[in-house]
Length: 172
Image (tube, rainbow, N blue to C red; front, side):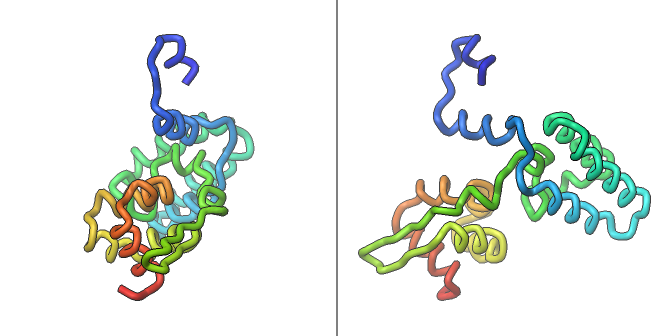
């Protein structure tokens, strides 16, 4: 972001938010879970599991940006990139993203329909009911909800929000 300022490049608030998210100065809270998911994908390949154990140890030594590059190298070598967007996220999001805090205080309410949904319900629906959301709105929106939660949800028209809330609550 500093470099963009030096070059007189204006970043939108959304671009600034994304840049902050993936170029932070501290680890997010998804690193351990993402390492475990990658181990599961290694499916008994002892060499890959050993590599992931070493990578996990590096998180205690390396700054986050160097750790993300190390995880990226593993992803490139192992072919795990084909799983991005499903349950495995890219190395920078895995390193910097603060998934468990981003939706903590979010609540959506619609007086007209009487529907409401918490950020936690939205996160859960984006993960566990991905296919249903994809069926109603397409893969792009389903992936965007999974990655950006309430930011994307808030940009939707009220009728789409209501449908997603109904999906989240098991009514659709």
